[in-house]
Image (tube, rainbow, N blue to C red):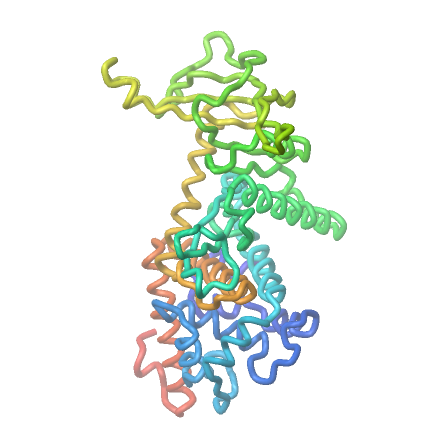
Length: 434
């Protein structure tokens, strides 16, 4: 039975959930400890875990101070005589193997997602996919997306299942400035990961777990992705999606899916259209002068178009309708949902925006600790690992984001104090009420 099923979760339980055996095993199966004298992978993992939680603004200097802090070493049972300098931490982040942290991230996500109830699995079988950006001065960042305004950007494209982040892709190449390039890659990587996991479960006869993954995940994506060719590829790969389409996209109607006497009132919205359509795409053509222009071409793959309007806008005066009327166009390849279910599913996409705000405001993801792509990947994996710990604490204890983060930090400090009192031969029960 899961240790988190029937009682609230404490910080000490969260820390004990991280398997030390896994950290040690990965140290031998990855290149994380090659040429490392002091800052082994396990120590870096604990250092970043603690420092991300305990520092409002993480930096290489704060990492140095954290590693040399006796309380940090006590809670993770590290050698109290070891010290490091900031320059050593900078070099280590630039060269340490990110695969070590990715495998820990994947393991923790898989274990935490096992805590979902059956109703939660059905509710969160919607994968929200979106990107968030972090900017840094172009003179500082070694690799980044050039914005031609003296700054470069790092793009994190994250898959979020509604409770936990399932995966992240870090982009620094200029081609990924377009979401039509970044988001499909994030989706393809997540689909591959899910299918490999399902195959592994079936091959190892984990029937109960495999059954929970039988339903296909639906990917929810905002208007950043509009490429008809990508939608066609999703369909060919049997990847289900609901994407918000830009209004007034040119399309050719095949036939309406509306039935006689179908309810057009969907609650908060009014259904305007539900039909199978063909979309158009631009095909690049080079002329004799070598210039490229685009020829409009119809894509024969059929998609489902659902158009709804906010009910509140429907009551506005005719004079104001052109400005106030708000329509939502959804394109999907899912046919076994009602129009209301399509609209309601997309509404859950907002969860990832709340998650982005949480990791930027509470875990300081909008600040780059390392300016190398290698270090950036390590920090984002560790930030998402910390996020999962806080989110599990939040879920188990029925708290808000900010309160959960604050209480995790307070319990962590109390735990250190307890250890220090015990090591000094005192009785922590005389200090803390139990």
